[in-house]
Image (cartoon, rainbow over all chains, first blue to last red; front, side, top):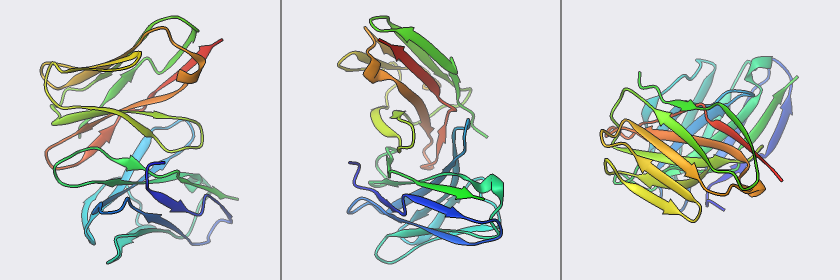
Length: 113
Length: 110
């Protein structure tokens, strides 16, 4: 158990809909990262937050957005969903500025029908 | 854009065999992590290497960071079916950004 929690574990929805994925980092970790992993693809970095502020952006679509709240949990919002958005979405947290190690949550499997 | 290339992409071996997977880049990293991921689950950290030339051992797994901090290797001795999984390397920069390779899918047959 990495200490990072993600909900829900599975999500099935239809094209055009909007969903919210939730992540709680390890206790005390200020950084949260979001990744997308599609079938036969590696981890694609989406976005990073540090202590409530956006720190870095990767290949995140304009239909996607995220935020980190004062209690450090984070949410990833996916809207106008398309079939190609079906994937595993992982959240990871990093202990602090002095380490590069990330601890991953169990992921949310999103299926868009 | 920093790219990490992992090779081989797929590896299928018999129990008891040895193997090495590679992670290469033209970029210098402040550190490099190796993760193992099982289907449908999140990556689990195996090791972090920081110093050029560093070698770390974790039971039957040996990790090496290249002298120039651009590449790394993972060697598994006497592989077991429980070693089956996706092995990912990730290189980190001083800016705190990590780049992941596409992974090596290892299958160890009993």
